Image (cartoon, rainbow, N blue to C red; front, top):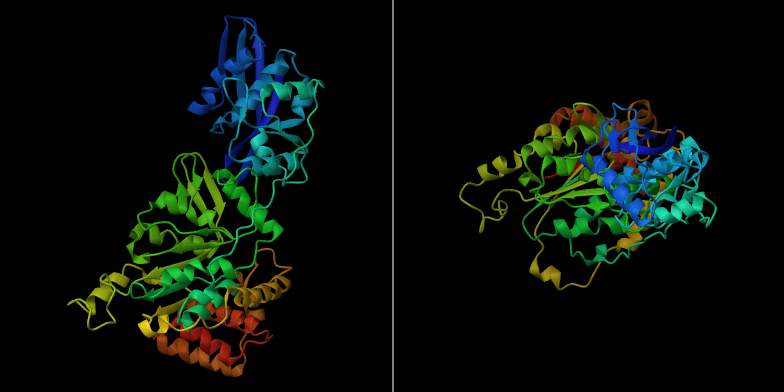
Length: 500
């Protein structure tokens, strides 16, 4: 007799269905797992054996073979423990086979039979919903998986509880979604003294999800500005929250099923490796650019990152996804993030201060900023100088709009964009607009076109730069609640493209 259970194998955020086949046949006692299992999957037989012993269930003295189909798909992770145990229980007639076949299961077994939390419950629930199956997962994963309302989620604490559920001795109620975790916004933009131009650039970047580069001397407030960016961003929509949480689920970053509506804010150190930023390593895990999906990737000390790491950002910035190549598969992760970079003007940091600059000025500045290639620099929509703040300004009362006022304007601009792109599946904000869509929504008036043409000729604006100026001008017009892009909007967008 061959019993079947079902689980998933992860390729990026895609969960591929895996059929777990278990055959108990006559022969010398043995327990083998085939179908390209990795070390963690191969060790499942020992955990299953110990869990069965803890439940006083004896394995038959026969040859037990478990096949993970399709056999040419690599199987990685400890979440195969539970479906293997279920298939074996069905093969020895402990639980009904039809109930097991109607379930998609994942979970790691402890030696005492309890179920341990695993990563990927959210994408697994999506796969279960598409297959019209019930999802069986550890109790610690139930609140996370239950966010996919289309699939029923059963979350027992142990294998024994799962057996009692299937045999009708003690049926379990479906799991409820976890509470949404809303972080308190504590850092206010009003705390930043001066830097009004940088604040304006931050507001424009937040409104249209534009990439921003801030260059200034040490201590001028670049990091302080970036850390207040989450306070002016609108919360994630329901679809965005689910999409972002699927990536965080695969990375094991969801805390007991809680899904936050706050946009991600990732700030990797400049010593981070390329797999850490882009993704890869064992299991091709998502990197920082994917963990920042629908949010912000803040890269402080931007030129200090390895050149190879910086250059790998170019394609994901344009396409909105990253493909990690492997010998047997290509793993894709979405990564529509807003890149905010901060840099000193030179290695010593004081190139603009004659009293403190080193002897290599201005060559040191050219060498230092030259670490950022021209193609990568061309992808920044906004570039702003952040000059040092005078000591006298630090004692002045707080002035300007705070995060709440700026956030309301940003939210209004995002609402306009959501309505504008409602019929365009691949476009959510102005930064995504391209082709005919961009020509339709960001065409400047006659005076604005003349201004843009002159700037393109004088400064050698690339085609990419030309379109990015139009997108920024469209965002500026949205912040001012104007339907047409006019010359003042184009002029301001150009001022951020070519800062003095």
